[in-house]
Length: 216
Image 1 (cartoon, rainbow, N blue to C red):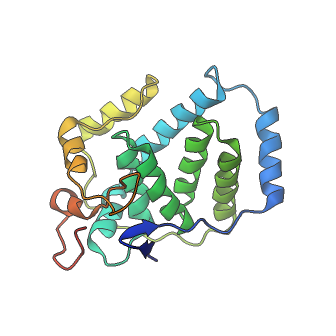
Image 2: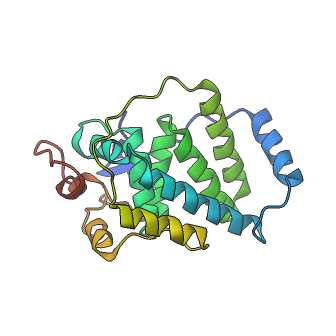
């Protein structure tokens, strides 16, 4: 599955709407939920999103997922989930949302949950409830996940430890400046107002480049 293209710009279709009953139940549960350990729902969502991002980037199969995204001809949801996390860790929240939407629409429950937390952090409760319902719908109907090779970590040990430490201290996840510069140099989708980076230049850093893959 690949994003639809219109004039060189990727457009990701929104998944079929989750059941209204599930969304209604989630809204009621949010109203009656026990207090979180942070002062507001928005702060709690930001903390949890940072933690999920740190776990995605530190997962043993994160590198293999990104390799799929960078080097295969079809964009893979596992890699889109990881690429979204990388973008979030560089402060590109709208671009992260774009790739998480693609991953969630392709069956990634983790990406759908990231979108739930992203919108909840922004106070966009309708979208937050929709993506939470979609993540639960995926969990209820999930098929056997694809087994990815675990050849090397995506990030060095010290970087992964630093990201987790920042999150546990209430700070946003953050990549080292050298890796942020790599993301900064990636081409963006033509005509996209939000300047969504495409990931294929990452093959020079995180995987073997594919000469046949489009580079922007």
